[in-house]
Length: 227
Ligand SMILES: NC(=O)c1ccc[n+]([C@@H]2O[C@H](COP(=O)([O-])OP(=O)(O)OC[C@H]3O[C@@H](n4cnc5c(N)ncnc54)[C@H](OP(=O)(O)O)[C@@H]3O)[C@@H](O)[C@H]2O)c1
Image 1 (spheres, protein in one colour):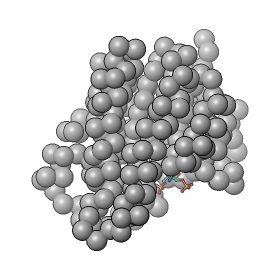
Image 2: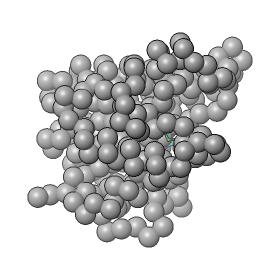
Image 3: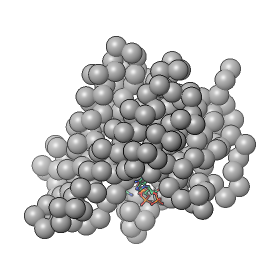
Image 4: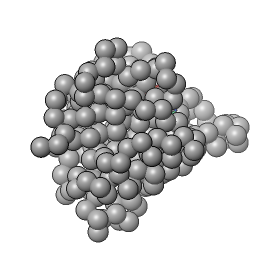
């Protein structure tokens, strides 16, 4: 049986890097880890079932160049994101563009570019690393503070996954969003859970992903997050 080919976009650090590490334990999977800088290799001693490509999800040319190197893909995980502490009323317009370019337009560009590779296989899974910050219901009940632009972008990413589900349903795609919880990465900062714990839940969710799960927003602990 040919190995399941999984592309993790944004794998240089944090959750993406750990995802590559934990997924590559399975010899029947081939993991392609995308990084923006060649020096940022995803694993210290690359396993034989890990390869890497250069991809900046905010740069359409970079995305197209990366996609041209991958003819077949089972599972596309879009994990890279831009997040800082900002408020909607004071975030400079150009910086707000960056939130949308990296977190919304970039992931859509990635999906479009890798669609032929996904269509070349039957698995056809698209997963976005999202956040409960993008949940309309959770945000209306809880204020994370100074994450307005990021939350808007993550909510747009969630809606993108729902709409992609509708647009790709006839071609048997599974589209899902994943909330990793609060994780002690560069983005999450100190106080969050260890990245190994969050990613163990992510790997379990990926392995359990079924067509009926489309469109679903699932968390690291297996719970369903309200859109
Ligand atoms: N940490 C948390 O508590 C938390 C909570 C909820 C959701 N999340 C989500 O989890 C995902 C991973 O976050 P993290 O905590 O692992 O953050 P992180 O440690 O700061 O890592 C961010 C990753 O995104 C990549 N990236 C940034 N801009 C990119 C671009 N234009 N193209 C491709 N890759 C890009 C970075 O690559 P470079 O090294 O090249 O910058 C890096 O690999 C994000 O989608 C984030 O929104 C995190």
